[in-house]
Image (cartoon, rainbow, N blue to C red; front, side):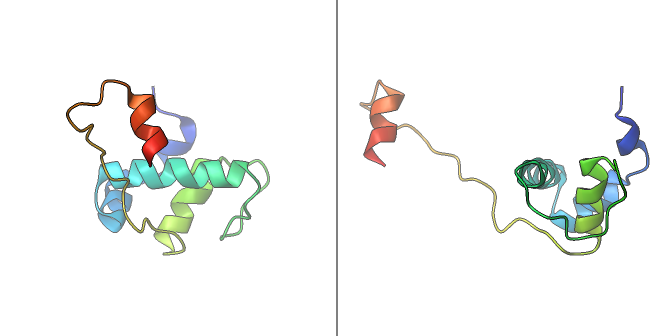
Amino acid sequence: MQHEAVKTIHTDKLADIVGGRYALTSLVSKRIQQLRAGAEPLVESKENEPLIQVVCREIEEGKIWLEKLEEVQVKPEGFDDIAELMDME
């Protein structure tokens, strides 16, 4: 079941703006986290407006974008403990 706020959002258009559905999902998720942590919206928002709608308008208006997606890290041969590998970084 789709969230009510998402029904009015044109996800295909937004995906085209940011470079695909994966990038859109990543950007929306990260921006919602920023807003929940206290960042100010870059567009006017209505009282009790769902954050997803605010973020989608920020994207439509060109206020936010992704610089790059996270890079996939590959575990080198010889490392059995992922914690050990992460300590090296």
